Image (cartoon, rainbow, N blue to C red; front, side, top):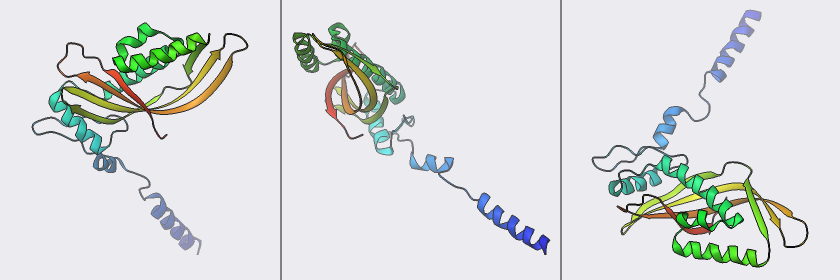
Length: 198
C-alpha cells in the first residue's frame, strides 16, 4: 500500500518539476530576431531594443557602418550624466560641446536665471540612469537617435539667503541626439529634451 502511494507521489512530482516554467532561452531568440539589411551582418541588440528598433538601426548602419547601438547607449548615458550635472552647476564649458546651439541657448537662459536669483545647485544620481534606444534613423544628412532615460537623483539647492533644501525625484525623459553624417566630428549633440512616461 505504501509503495503504491509513494509511486503516485513520485509521478506527480515528476510531472510538476519536469515542466518548463517561464521564458526559455530559445524563446528569447525568437522574440528578438536580429535585423539586417541586404548584404549586411545582423545588428547586435542593445539592452531594451525591440525588433522594430533593430530594423531602424540597420537602416542607420547602411548609411553609417560604424554605428554600434550598445556603444552609442553607453556614450549617451555618460553624456546624460555630464549634461545634468553641468546644468545644475552652471558649467557652460562642459555643456557647450554636448548640445546643439538652440539647446545650449535654452540651457544658458535657465542657468542665468538661477544665477540672478543667487542660487547654487548640486545634483547627484542615486543609481546609474537607465538608457533605452527608442529610435535610430537618418534625416537628410543627419543621424538621429532618441533615447529614453529613467533616473533617480538628488538635488541640493542653496538659495542666496537661508538654508539649503534637498529634493529627491525620479525622472523620465526622451533625449534626441543628432550628428552630421560624414562630418569630421563623430560626436553626437543633444538636440531636444521632452518628458516621457516612466
